[in-house]
Structures are given as structure tokens and as C-alpha cells.
Figure 1 (spheres, rainbow, N blue to C red):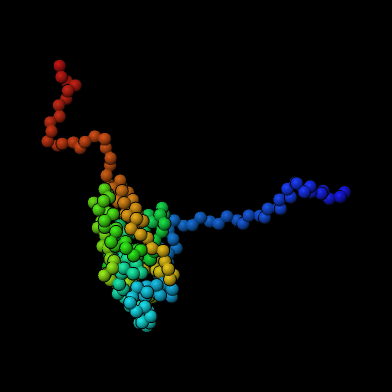
Figure 2 (figure 1 turned 180 degrees about the vertical axis):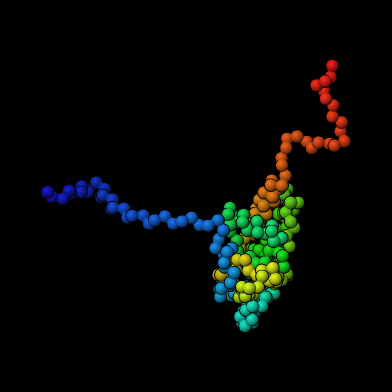
Amino acid sequence: MSARQTHPSEPAPAPASRPKPPATTAAPAHPPALDHATVVTADGASWLASASTHPRSTLALWESHPQAPLVLPCGSAFDVVSVDAVFGRRILDRLWEEGPGSGPVAAHRGRMLIFAAPGTAHRLPSLLAWEEWSPAVPAPLCHGAGDAVTVPPLVAPDEDVPAERLGSRWLVAPDTRDPWLPGPEALLWASVRVARAMAGAAVRVSIFPPADRDVKVYDVSRRR
């Protein structure tokens, strides 16, 4: 039997489809960075040093003492938003579970330092002031142009040192020369979501007004 001839006006038969690759597993709710990326890479160190007025000399000095923290200016490469440690962890949970994620994050003396896009330190307080849930948000310390922050060491300390004894440490270490940084809108969104969740867990909503202990209650069912 001869092969079937295709008419010029008839579309050519579609080629056989290739088998699809097996589906990959879903990404974890928390990024791997929150679990083990506590060491700054070479690209991450270069990005941090770029905040200094003399990046090369700053990087060389830091690499010669990798276990020492460093004070870097804010406002050019990054801003830093310092929040309460517990509230900050919940902000990170929101950013990673329901939002766009986060950039580098460090812990320093009971506070959480969230590295944010330049300009965030100026805009975030203003946005919070207009938000109705702002009283429930612990006031953040925003460091921008003209400020400086203490950055954790490049190399993590010995594993036998308890975390509570460390002056500063990375929770999400920078690993690229151009990391994505959340802006004021993302941090405002996450802060309000956390505040609302905390308020909802602590307060029971009732359609009845609170009872006044000094008010006399009469049994009207016995009225004649």
C-alpha cells in the first residue's frame, strides 16, 4: 500500500508530542535561605561593600577579618528596617508564604534587620501613619541615608557558640551582587497582615457590648 499523499491545501499532520517531564515537588513554604544560608558568598560580600564610599578597600579589610562585624552606611545600596525579633519573624513568614519574599535579613541584639530597597526608610513611617492598623504594629527603626548599621560577619562563628550570645548573625545572607529588596509597600502589607492576625487571635469578636459590672440587672420575666 502506498503512503497517503497530503493535499497542498490540507494541513500537515502534527508531529508526535514528546513525553512531559515528571512534575517537580512543590517549593517549601519557607525558602531554604531561612534554614541554612547563613554564610555570605563572595558576590554577596561585594554587594555589601558597595554601600561604602571605598568598596575595594572595605572588602579587602573585611576579608582579612571575616569573623568581625562591619559598620556600613545606608541609603545607597540598601536601607535597613529594624523590628522586634518576634514580630520580624512573622513578617518574614508572611513575605515568603503569601508575598514576594525577602532580601538579606540579619539578627542584631534582639532585633531583626530587614534589608530593604533604598528610600524605604523615608516612606515606610509615612505609610504606617496613614494605616488604621498602625497602633498594632510595633514601631520600626528605619535606617536610611545618613545612617549606618552593624552588619554581621562574613563567616559564621563556631557552631558551639549559642545563638543568644552572638552580637549579630545572618538569617538570610546575601548571595548575589544584585539582590531583590522589598520596598515600603511590601513591608507595610506584611506588617499589617501580621498585626491583624495577632489581633484576631487575641481578641474574640462579639456582637454584644461588654457588660458593665456596676449596672443592676432586673428579671423582667417576673414583672406583673
